[in-house]
Image: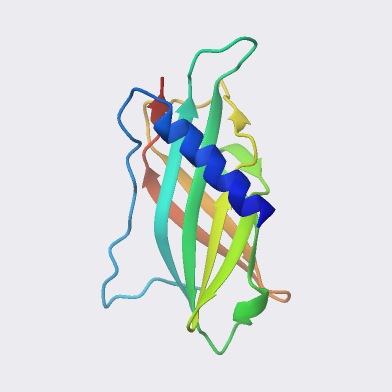
Length: 160
């Protein structure tokens, strides 16, 4: 519950306190073609990536990543133990960031939802071209198996 409040406050403070438009939401349309990664059905529901460039004393620009993944019941993997180990942010197939996200898990019917976020944001790297899209490579683990889920073409938004 504590993490959910922190996540809501973080997102709310950035989105509602700025005079710029809301960041682009990257949603993946649900179709009959399920997304399979190592035989695991995953749906990337919402992905937000933005740079906080709001003015303030002793403040540095930070990159924030939040999102939601849905996992659908599968007999090969233990749905209850699947977790996000780490997330890598890539640009031009080079790893720019690697972090362990703050996560919150919910179960809805036979579906598991994992919400994830950076904790305070990541200090902006000079290696990142903020005008170009990034890829998120999400490392998943179910207690026995390592799996990787790639989300390509994620736009970086800026909050001024």
